[in-house]
Length: 119
Image (cartoon, rainbow, N blue to C red; front, side, top):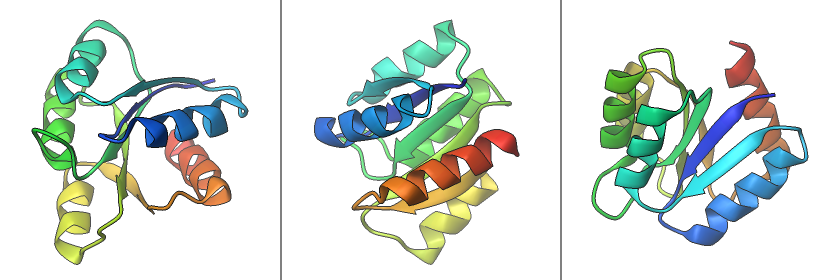
């Protein structure tokens, strides 16, 4: 299945996503630090990045920009507890294919991840 990174400043959110998606057969590596996630992508082939929009030092949009420089083919999906039209436009312009609103709905997450991976 797919290799997926999750970047969320809340450790429990990354662990929850990992548990949900590993049951679907994916390999999921959660991060809470932006630099660690970016460095991981520099050294590993990743199919999908699930990025929270509000992080500690950077925004999810900035991280996505960095990831696209490393691997233009990487697929991305954004997470947010604060959905806005501007953020949605920005992330879609950078190539994020989906958007999940927190709190995370298990079914919605599974469906959207499959949709992004198959696109």
